[in-house]
Length: 63
Image 1: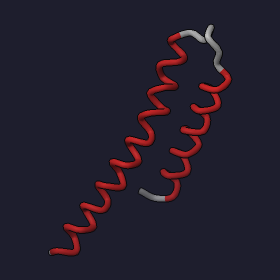
Image 2: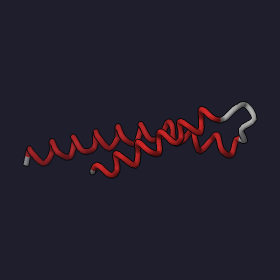
Image 3: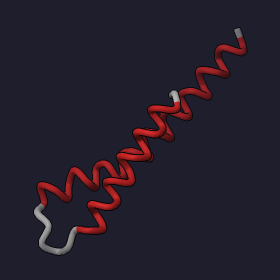
């Protein structure tokens, strides 16, 4: 992952956090569900990308 991907992931996560915090009990489900998917999905995606890069780097150094 290059720096632009990290930067865009951080922006998306922070915007989702702002939307989640600004919402109240009357926020429609159609807005809450995608925001929660972003809030929980982005960290999982980033951890998966980091693990994949380390595994790929480890297999490249063994060859």
